[in-house]
Length: 236
Image 1 (spheres, one colour):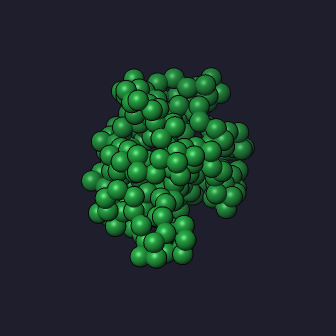
Image 2 (tube, helix red, strand yellow):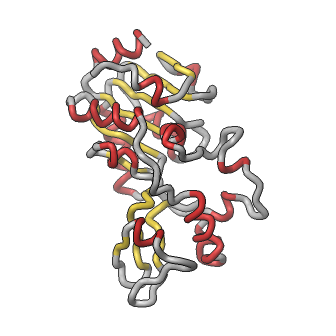
């Protein structure tokens, strides 16, 4: 912790790259840990149910799973989200690059967030382009339809869909500018997102995660633990 505090004190262009483990302390389950979403028993795998093809071929089943497992509107920011917002307010943090779709970074007050996999808080009619909030979608039953009759799709990146080009470009440029990159709460096994770390050219690479990752040996500092508990100890 003393080393992490020193690195943060000495850095002025910090970028935070986070995954599902950042939100577990808010009660949102991750995906690949022992008690994660992908270890639960379903007749159809979550990867299939969260795919582009399944969305259009089994739309009602998709939304049943989506509302039950991914639309966690009750969740509140935890210590990690709050500390990152504080670091941004103090001018230390350039941006957050996140694989999460829950919007908790913004709810905590962070302004510059690159959401690689989209967000549950934006939903678009595929016919007319009208936008709907997550609360509006949650209030629907079955397959959500726009007033025009079009299908409403969450603005999340499903399996089989490309990442948004502008978001990718912005995230890469920000990581390239960082003097300290903190990678946290991610197994670093989901590509292309996990490959973003390779664009870092700064001085120090820090990893915070409950379990070991493929990147551990390349980091200047590795802390195994809960992201919120660790970041809450940082003085800003």
